Amino acid sequence: MRKYNSRSRAPIRRKSQNKSSLFGKLMRYSIIALTIALFFGLIYHYREGLKYYLGYKSLKKMTPEQVEAKRISDVRNFQVLENHKGKAIGLDVSEFQGNIDWRLVKNIENQYPLEFVFIRATAGNDREDGQFAANWLGAKENKMIRGAYHYYRPNENSLEQAQLFIKTVQLKKGDLPPVLDIEKLPNEQSLKNMKLGLSRWLKAIEAHYKVKPIIYTSEKYYDDFLKDEFGDYLFWIANYNFYRDKIGTNWLFWQFTEKATVQGIKGNVDVNIYNGDLEQLRFITIE
Image (cartoon, rainbow, N blue to C red; front, side):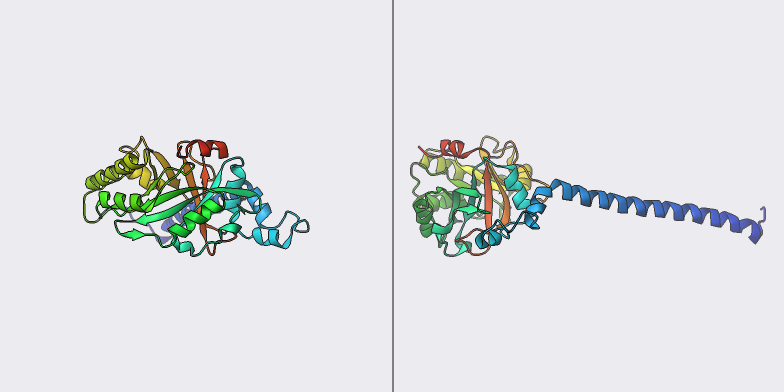
């Protein structure tokens, strides 16, 4: 075996260490540069929302009520609304919003009119929403296009759930089609049986109201479990991702936030965009 003294080995180790150190520095600088580029990229992408939110628009021209309204939504919410001028904007509510003063429910940011609202009517096979009757009447008196939705519980009988909704909701001319809200997976039955239950609910509701229901769910749930078997239904999709700021081309409605503030409603409320204008929204209502 060839022998090396300490002097001959030392330079080899230092050379290896120098290469490793240089590589580590390059990696750190690359990560820092990428982070900075991403940061400024986001600022540019949401520049209009940031201008509004940070008060770059003149506050001197705003009333005290408008200054307070500026606080209503975050940067992304404002940017999304700006990107969808001309589209119909609406809410969805339930008993979790408490007592709503519908006389005050008019717009968002004092410039985006609220044209429609979906109201939770029932949940599972035994739960009527405690505020449904009041909200249903209040929305009508407020001249908003209204729709009712059912929160589906996968582990309960689908036809019993359909009958509860039918007993609770009387749809009239000008109302939106009924909505099935599905968000959970079953823990007491197979996924196949759950889909069978969903299909039975949808068919029972369509047979009663003579209109095809809409399905509400998250984008991931839609992609993973519903897209193939229920592709002939129209979908209302929930997606709050900061990086999404435009409605999907094949979405009927988009729930883009759950953290908006609207005058007349205490706490946070969901805001939705219809993939069309007000006249097109009226076109899909019950005749």
